[in-house]
Amino acid sequence: MENEDRSWMYNRTYTNRVGLRKEYKDGVARFIAKEMTLDDFLTERIIPCPYRNFKGGKLLSPDVVTLHLYKKEFKLNYTMWTAHGESIIANNFTFQNYVESPIRENNVESS
Image (cartoon, rainbow, N blue to C red; front, side):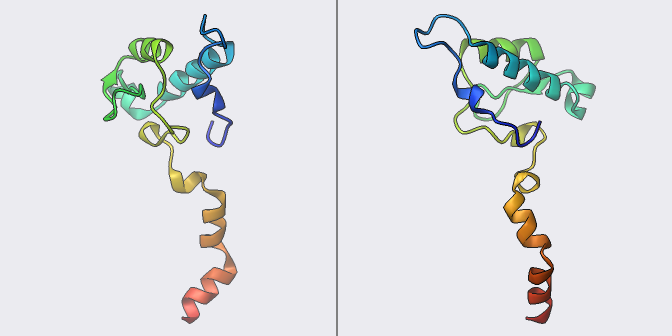
């Protein structure tokens, strides 16, 4: 799921604001399904809610999180789900290549 296009997160309703877009509902379902595979859910049966007004990430049931995301929206600029098991470094291909580059390793060792 990492590195997927998440533009759906901020395209919630149709232009006339009547009804949720299918891709939004599908994306929320994938988000919730991913959450339900993480250790926190498996032990506590709750997940952090990425609803924009919960900046600290309240822990709620998946059904309540789904409802919040249907009624409102994801917090701003949250396409990298760091509070939900994703790592910024693991997803930054350029950074990984820079760090793991043999040329970089030689420069570090020789300096």
